[in-house]
Length: 439
Image (cartoon, rainbow, N blue to C red):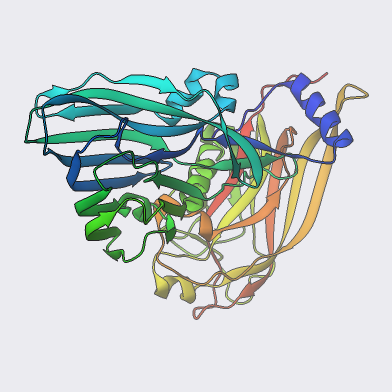
């Protein structure tokens, strides 16, 4: 979720509330949906699920569900009412229908003849669940349709929907970076709702997590037994599957690397805010222009061999509020280049900026100087869609609103590489445009 950058009045409000309140963390993003459920008979009838196949595709924060059912009516002709439940946080009634629709944007039920009419019904009494360590009121909404079954017939039904998985992202005035929670998709098989003896003769689940894994996600757990997987596909198959035996399918994954990468990229300084980019002498073909060229296969490399002491890079800015500084240390084009070049261990960062005094209603000059020690990250395959794990944070100014003029990084010590020359692949100056006019 985008951070909201507000004007001076809100800055004053944040300053006072953060001063007088002990808690400075707050939610910035949350899904309205807790879990979804299986296709259910809304009244007891002798109708049997002969075959069910669930195809579940993870897509960022969302899951796309495709449920295929072959249903047998061994008795007389009749109409049946079918539905599937979705559990919404009761808060979504307060915050509005738009939040519900954002969290559950698409659904439909079809049979052999096409799309069926779907009506929505909400249970009157809320349930109480524990979510993210808090008691939450949950309302169950049913998506219901009617289908006609001829006597001694077989019918095919398809349920499709998209749901935003459970999440709770947090923000704090103490740090520029948000904290992204794990994502959780929950599919509940109870209430099963009168499918004969609740036995599915042929049952299959396919979980497709390939897109998320490609974008840097980590699948932390699949709560079903006996999944087998390869290449981001996870498959479960069973005969005579009892809906009463396994209560829920839970898919827990962490997508923070991709989300943080998108966040860093969104707040990277734009070129029209850079007055100059300079450095100490460089190695040929590894000039200072490579430092902010958005290409991780290039790098700035200092021109002298040794421990990097005395080498520096400097950026001068205009109309920019700096909130964080980060670097991609070394040259992670491949394992060979990563360990060939020195990587920075200690550096000095200098920042010149305005600091607005709200009591005197004017800006004062502020100078920051810090010695920073960086972790020597082990090489792993570099994923440009999720480069955030490679990012070394040099400065985190929190959610400050100070116009910044100059940043200088001076190398003090390095982790030595085999060729004894120091590299920085990319420099990130994160913040936003400063359009405030101070007296």
